[in-house]
Image 1 (cartoon, rainbow, N blue to C red):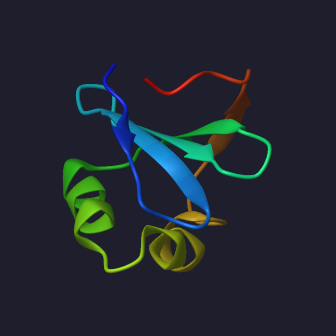
Image 2 (tube, rainbow, N blue to C red; image 1 turned 30 degrees about the horizontal axis):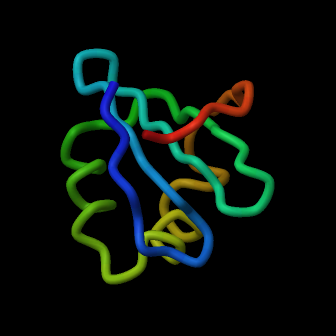
Length: 76
């Protein structure tokens, strides 16, 4: 899995597994990593293309997808 650094006040990095449609987000506060399930490739592209990934997360991801909190991982 390849992490992409983000220039965001809320998020530090993103990773995506297209074959499983899982979005991984690493949050700036606390460094927690969450994975969001059933996240389509088109939704991932929309996230990457957003002017603000933090605002996109709040409007289109949080409370919209099943998720799991993971152990703290280091984004490469």
